[in-house]
Image (cartoon, rainbow over all chains, first blue to last red):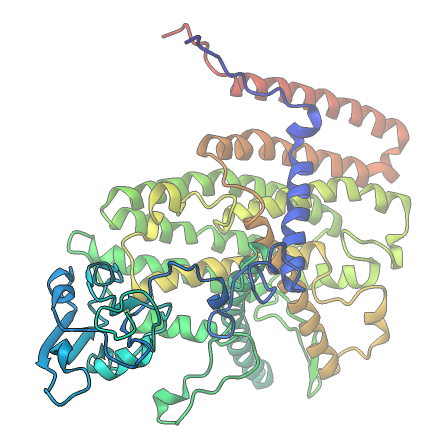
Length: 188
Length: 410
């Protein structure tokens, strides 16, 4: 490759004095300041911000409606259209979970139950949200499509035990999921 | 000595140091909020009074847009661990922060904050010390603050702080000269060094850069604006260098030197550097306002209509003065986000080759304008011709000084 020697640009006398450039720069800086002061920052509209700068002011303004389909938030358990727990406590998610956030105690479904033929369901199902890294491996590995990563991302607590989602909380987040695998379903 | 004056002096010291310190915190909040809106951000806007710490149920959220942020900042600095590395030179390491703050606060003593107040028959000037050598005192004391920075750099016993200290030293030397020389035309024009008298003069005859009333409306006075304008530019730029502000913040220079001279400092010791820098900025702004923009005067002849010596007039003038200083602080911040940092050699060039010479020529230019009535048109023409010759000679010398050695000479 040929060597290209880059010359420094020749400055005119006006540019060498430097003050004009500083003055121009100040006008630009001030224009930005005034625009954001009066809530008219460029791009504030499509970024859903308050107008004071492009910053979204978090608790008041959220980007929930801009979350993508594939967003990975809190993992949660789901029930099917007949309100049956989809989880059969095979513990695959527990084994694959890289930070070991999931803890399952499997339990049998009593024989007089409507869903006795499913045989097993979790007795306890805890996900430690302090440990969870939102990798989505549990969702991927689940043969029953019982665990999903939901778009919930505001998970807070004042102590460690509050950050552990138990079975009840997980179903609360997950809710009902309709469709696809209906292995144990009469409708099949 | 008169007891009234003594008590007044004590009150003045307390009040003016209070004003300076609260201005430092105002600087902090301005710096953060103004920087934020310049950069299309929001900045800290939701600090509230943390009443829940004191046992109340809820924090008090006032609609003040984070104005209590400086309190939170200060608390953070006090509560942080004050860490002294094991390898530093302890005595100087502890001494340096104080050496930065003290000069900055001392220089506040000669700034006239407002018009003199009349209390019980005594006329009390609104400056802690109404010295007859105002600007000289400020230069003498303010240049001491570089010792703090240099000592901090040296005592830290670590390479980046050391570079910072060395740079601070070199920068101070190169700008102090321009700073001192640039003010000479101003002093020649006023014929005195008492800052109080300088402001009085501006009250009657127009601000230095805005001679629109009194005796300011004459051709000679407007001609005088040329040298005074040059001195204003050099002086303001040198104040930027003196206070280590952008674009001359080479001693701390985050991108090159981590934190410069205060890399090894933490907690309140770091906060003292911080305060020193901002206090120097406040004093610098106050000095610019006092010398060039009329100090506490409202301007346009309004001051002479107000009853002199009344307490409310004094307070009004203090308010006007602080308003002008605030404006200048905003200007400092505006410049910080407009002009990129100079390279070290560019800084030296600017100080030694551009500003020093320009200030020197400016002194003679001002002298010519002032002497015009006494030496007449012929004298001025001869003087002007000499001045232009000297200027051309200086430019040639300066060109020679900045010429880079040719690449072949190894």
